[in-house]
Length: 236
Image (tube, rainbow, N blue to C red):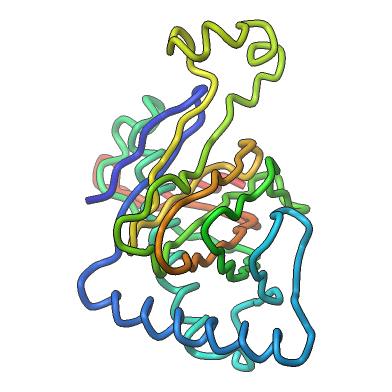
Protein backbone atom coordinates (compact mmCIF):
# COMPACT_ATOMS: atom_id res chain seq x y z
CA UNK A 1 0.00 0.00 0.00
CA UNK A 2 1.28 3.46 -0.94
CA UNK A 3 1.72 6.02 1.79
CA UNK A 4 2.96 9.60 1.99
CA UNK A 5 4.29 10.91 5.30
CA UNK A 6 5.71 14.34 6.00
CA UNK A 7 9.11 14.73 7.67
CA UNK A 8 10.82 18.00 8.68
CA UNK A 9 8.14 18.60 7.00
CA UNK A 10 9.10 17.27 3.55
CA UNK A 11 7.13 14.43 1.91
CA UNK A 12 8.31 10.81 2.01
CA UNK A 13 6.68 8.13 -0.12
CA UNK A 14 6.88 4.45 0.80
CA UNK A 15 5.28 1.62 -1.13
CA UNK A 16 5.94 -1.89 -2.45
CA UNK A 17 5.94 -3.35 -5.94
CA UNK A 18 3.10 -5.67 -6.87
CA UNK A 19 3.42 -9.46 -7.03
CA UNK A 20 4.06 -9.55 -10.78
CA UNK A 21 6.90 -7.03 -10.51
CA UNK A 22 8.97 -9.14 -8.12
CA UNK A 23 10.21 -11.11 -11.14
CA UNK A 24 11.41 -7.81 -12.65
CA UNK A 25 13.41 -7.12 -9.49
CA UNK A 26 14.86 -10.63 -9.50
CA UNK A 27 15.93 -10.37 -13.16
CA UNK A 28 17.54 -6.99 -12.53
CA UNK A 29 19.36 -8.29 -9.44
CA UNK A 30 20.81 -11.15 -11.49
CA UNK A 31 21.87 -8.71 -14.22
CA UNK A 32 23.66 -6.37 -11.79
CA UNK A 33 25.30 -9.29 -9.98
CA UNK A 34 26.75 -10.51 -13.26
CA UNK A 35 27.86 -6.99 -14.17
CA UNK A 36 29.68 -6.61 -10.86
CA UNK A 37 31.47 -9.95 -11.38
CA UNK A 38 32.65 -8.88 -14.82
CA UNK A 39 33.93 -5.57 -13.47
CA UNK A 40 35.83 -7.20 -10.63
CA UNK A 41 37.34 -9.80 -12.97
CA UNK A 42 38.49 -7.02 -15.29
CA UNK A 43 39.75 -4.86 -12.44
CA UNK A 44 36.97 -2.30 -12.95
CA UNK A 45 35.49 -1.72 -9.50
CA UNK A 46 33.25 1.22 -10.34
CA UNK A 47 32.95 3.38 -7.25
CA UNK A 48 31.46 6.83 -6.71
CA UNK A 49 33.09 7.75 -3.40
CA UNK A 50 29.81 7.98 -1.46
CA UNK A 51 30.21 4.55 0.15
CA UNK A 52 33.16 2.91 1.85
CA UNK A 53 32.99 -0.39 -0.04
CA UNK A 54 30.68 -2.29 -2.36
CA UNK A 55 29.96 -1.88 -6.05
CA UNK A 56 28.39 1.04 -7.90
CA UNK A 57 27.25 0.57 -11.48
CA UNK A 58 27.58 3.01 -14.33
CA UNK A 59 24.80 5.57 -14.76
CA UNK A 60 21.76 4.73 -16.91
CA UNK A 61 19.05 6.62 -18.76
CA UNK A 62 15.83 5.35 -20.32
CA UNK A 63 16.69 4.52 -23.94
CA UNK A 64 16.54 1.79 -26.54
CA UNK A 65 20.22 1.07 -25.85
CA UNK A 66 19.65 0.55 -22.12
CA UNK A 67 19.15 -3.12 -21.10
CA UNK A 68 15.48 -4.04 -20.74
CA UNK A 69 15.99 -5.08 -17.09
CA UNK A 70 16.94 -1.49 -16.26
CA UNK A 71 14.25 0.16 -18.37
CA UNK A 72 11.73 -2.00 -16.50
CA UNK A 73 13.03 -0.61 -13.19
CA UNK A 74 12.70 2.94 -14.50
CA UNK A 75 9.11 2.17 -15.48
CA UNK A 76 8.29 0.95 -11.97
CA UNK A 77 9.97 3.95 -10.36
CA UNK A 78 8.32 6.52 -12.65
CA UNK A 79 4.88 4.96 -12.04
CA UNK A 80 5.35 5.36 -8.29
CA UNK A 81 6.75 8.87 -8.73
CA UNK A 82 3.55 9.86 -10.53
CA UNK A 83 1.44 8.41 -7.70
CA UNK A 84 3.63 10.18 -5.13
CA UNK A 85 3.14 13.58 -6.76
CA UNK A 86 -0.60 13.01 -7.18
CA UNK A 87 -0.89 12.25 -3.47
CA UNK A 88 1.03 15.41 -2.61
CA UNK A 89 -1.37 17.44 -4.75
CA UNK A 90 -4.40 15.76 -3.17
CA UNK A 91 -3.02 16.63 0.28
CA UNK A 92 -2.64 20.29 -0.66
CA UNK A 93 -5.63 22.32 0.54
CA UNK A 94 -5.34 24.44 -2.59
CA UNK A 95 -6.32 21.34 -4.60
CA UNK A 96 -9.77 21.16 -3.00
CA UNK A 97 -12.32 21.12 -5.77
CA UNK A 98 -10.04 19.49 -8.32
CA UNK A 99 -11.78 16.13 -7.88
CA UNK A 100 -10.11 13.43 -9.92
CA UNK A 101 -7.37 14.71 -12.21
CA UNK A 102 -4.82 13.56 -14.76
CA UNK A 103 -1.16 14.40 -14.23
CA UNK A 104 1.17 15.19 -17.09
CA UNK A 105 4.79 14.81 -16.08
CA UNK A 106 8.04 15.23 -18.02
CA UNK A 107 11.20 14.17 -16.22
CA UNK A 108 14.93 13.85 -16.68
CA UNK A 109 15.98 10.56 -15.10
CA UNK A 110 19.28 8.96 -14.16
CA UNK A 111 19.68 5.64 -12.36
CA UNK A 112 22.35 3.32 -10.99
CA UNK A 113 22.70 0.11 -8.99
CA UNK A 114 24.48 -0.46 -5.70
CA UNK A 115 25.58 -3.82 -4.33
CA UNK A 116 26.59 -3.75 -0.66
CA UNK A 117 28.17 -6.38 1.57
CA UNK A 118 27.70 -6.62 5.36
CA UNK A 119 29.33 -3.65 7.06
CA UNK A 120 29.10 -1.36 4.03
CA UNK A 121 27.77 2.16 4.50
CA UNK A 122 26.88 5.16 2.36
CA UNK A 123 28.01 8.54 3.65
CA UNK A 124 25.59 11.45 4.04
CA UNK A 125 24.75 13.14 0.74
CA UNK A 126 21.99 14.77 -1.29
CA UNK A 127 20.82 14.38 -4.90
CA UNK A 128 20.48 17.39 -7.20
CA UNK A 129 19.89 18.07 -10.88
CA UNK A 130 19.67 21.26 -12.94
CA UNK A 131 15.90 21.24 -12.44
CA UNK A 132 14.01 23.07 -9.69
CA UNK A 133 12.61 19.90 -8.13
CA UNK A 134 14.53 16.63 -7.93
CA UNK A 135 13.18 13.47 -6.34
CA UNK A 136 15.40 10.61 -5.19
CA UNK A 137 14.10 7.07 -5.49
CA UNK A 138 15.39 3.83 -3.95
CA UNK A 139 14.07 0.44 -5.05
CA UNK A 140 15.30 -2.56 -3.05
CA UNK A 141 15.87 -5.47 -5.44
CA UNK A 142 17.35 -7.90 -2.93
CA UNK A 143 17.69 -7.74 0.85
CA UNK A 144 19.14 -10.81 2.65
CA UNK A 145 16.88 -12.74 5.00
CA UNK A 146 17.41 -11.82 8.64
CA UNK A 147 19.12 -8.56 7.71
CA UNK A 148 19.91 -6.45 10.78
CA UNK A 149 20.52 -2.76 10.33
CA UNK A 150 21.20 -1.20 6.93
CA UNK A 151 18.51 1.44 7.37
CA UNK A 152 18.23 4.43 5.09
CA UNK A 153 18.58 7.37 7.47
CA UNK A 154 16.99 10.68 6.50
CA UNK A 155 18.25 13.79 8.29
CA UNK A 156 16.46 16.98 9.20
CA UNK A 157 17.73 19.45 6.55
CA UNK A 158 17.74 22.22 9.17
CA UNK A 159 21.42 21.98 10.12
CA UNK A 160 21.00 24.63 12.80
CA UNK A 161 18.32 22.55 14.49
CA UNK A 162 20.41 19.37 14.30
CA UNK A 163 23.45 21.06 15.85
CA UNK A 164 21.55 22.86 18.61
CA UNK A 165 19.50 20.06 20.21
CA UNK A 166 22.45 18.17 21.71
CA UNK A 167 23.41 14.50 21.61
CA UNK A 168 21.59 13.55 24.82
CA UNK A 169 18.24 14.89 23.60
CA UNK A 170 18.65 13.04 20.31
CA UNK A 171 19.46 9.76 22.06
CA UNK A 172 16.41 10.13 24.31
CA UNK A 173 14.19 10.67 21.29
CA UNK A 174 13.15 14.13 22.46
CA UNK A 175 13.51 15.64 19.00
CA UNK A 176 13.13 14.67 15.39
CA UNK A 177 16.57 14.88 13.83
CA UNK A 178 16.60 11.60 11.86
CA UNK A 179 14.16 9.06 10.49
CA UNK A 180 15.37 5.49 9.85
CA UNK A 181 13.67 3.23 7.29
CA UNK A 182 14.36 -0.50 7.29
CA UNK A 183 15.10 -2.01 3.85
CA UNK A 184 12.87 -4.79 2.56
CA UNK A 185 12.89 -6.54 -0.81
CA UNK A 186 10.31 -4.91 -3.07
CA UNK A 187 10.06 -1.67 -1.12
CA UNK A 188 10.32 1.62 -2.96
CA UNK A 189 11.06 4.97 -1.33
CA UNK A 190 10.80 8.43 -2.90
CA UNK A 191 11.73 11.73 -1.27
CA UNK A 192 13.06 15.17 -2.21
CA UNK A 193 16.66 14.88 -3.34
CA UNK A 194 17.65 17.80 -1.13
CA UNK A 195 16.90 15.74 1.99
CA UNK A 196 20.27 14.66 3.47
CA UNK A 197 20.52 10.88 3.85
CA UNK A 198 22.97 8.08 4.48
CA UNK A 199 22.86 4.27 4.77
CA UNK A 200 23.84 2.48 7.96
CA UNK A 201 25.86 -0.79 8.05
CA UNK A 202 24.01 -4.10 8.14
CA UNK A 203 24.64 -7.65 9.34
CA UNK A 204 23.46 -10.59 7.24
CA UNK A 205 24.57 -13.57 5.20
CA UNK A 206 24.63 -12.29 1.65
CA UNK A 207 24.58 -8.94 -0.11
CA UNK A 208 22.00 -6.24 -0.66
CA UNK A 209 21.15 -4.87 -4.11
CA UNK A 210 19.34 -1.59 -4.65
CA UNK A 211 18.49 0.54 -7.67
CA UNK A 212 18.57 4.28 -7.09
CA UNK A 213 17.53 7.03 -9.44
CA UNK A 214 17.03 10.77 -9.66
CA UNK A 215 14.04 12.35 -11.34
CA UNK A 216 14.42 16.00 -12.29
CA UNK A 217 10.99 17.48 -12.98
CA UNK A 218 11.16 19.30 -16.33
CA UNK A 219 7.45 20.16 -16.57
CA UNK A 220 4.23 19.27 -14.78
CA UNK A 221 0.58 20.03 -15.40
CA UNK A 222 -2.76 18.62 -14.40
CA UNK A 223 -6.19 18.57 -15.99
CA UNK A 224 -9.51 18.15 -14.21
CA UNK A 225 -13.21 18.84 -14.45
CA UNK A 226 -14.75 21.71 -12.52
CA UNK A 227 -18.36 22.81 -12.90
CA UNK A 228 -18.57 20.71 -16.02
CA UNK A 229 -15.61 22.44 -17.64
CA UNK A 230 -12.26 20.90 -18.52
CA UNK A 231 -9.43 22.85 -16.90
CA UNK A 232 -5.70 22.45 -17.50
CA UNK A 233 -3.35 23.89 -14.88
CA UNK A 234 0.34 24.24 -15.66
CA UNK A 235 2.35 23.78 -12.46
CA UNK A 236 5.67 24.53 -14.16
